[in-house]
Length: 389
Image (tube, rainbow, N blue to C red; front, side):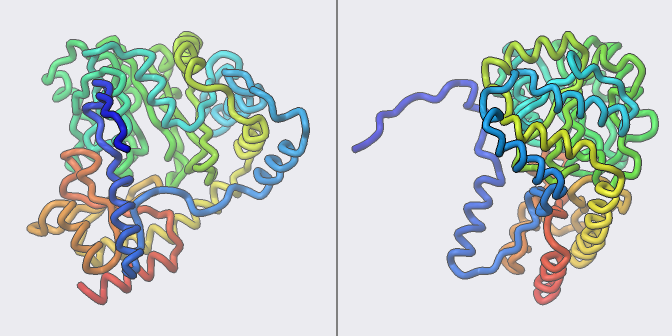
């Protein structure tokens, strides 16, 4: 039997299958054919959460009364923990009852924000390079993506004058992300203040995606720390990277009461609250002390050294002052674009490095390496590449 043909919705027409989804199939095929492939592409933390977090999950899941539906705004225990975490770690005050909205991962929050605020034709300022989901969410919601270019020569910071020369008519949202993914760039000292002033000047909302601030970064910062930032800022955060809980899908939005009330009008029609034991365990994670952050950063610091050795081995240049879960390197001159370079290393050496072009045209001369691999795996990658190159 042949399934009938049904036309796709127009909203999906400009959205392609995620690059990693296709590339992982190819890697699986290579492995099935007997080729050893080391995948240094995706940033899925390989370490478990803290043992106390696991113990809390198990204990709460064992209670018969904890298996029902939960409030759409999340359990009070989690909202209060996020509020305390922001106060302690960022110096930001968020009312747990009205200014915090737990999410099933911050990725869904990006979609919820776009669906809440964008009408067809509304423009969204998108970082180039930047996380591809930003662009996909805006397009699905009917928005028009307008790139603002981030360049190595400018420390991967926005050029506000260039953005204004492009024209601000019809712009409703601007998406920003610092520490930046994929480049690992940290915000310059006055960037957050300049972003808030820019948004206020043009009457737009800033959407700040902030999941990397505790990884390889001695000074975690929130855009909400700028005075009166809540007037123009919605900040997303997540436990995926900072607490090794990617598969748990636990994130949050911090914003003014009005923004939270607006977003929940959409969100409450899309999903219900998270499983309570997960929320209780996440609250436990948010209470961890400095030892947790110190330990995880010592681990990533050792891996960082190996990743830089890979970049040295393949002839890439890089900024050693990077943050986040990846390292970012510029290709050697005259060695093709990032896709050719990545495929050369994959097919000849059996090591997959992410081509920077998947994050936008400004990434075409770069590659990215995930630190979610053991030191032994990274060393084996170095050895495999050296055998060929």
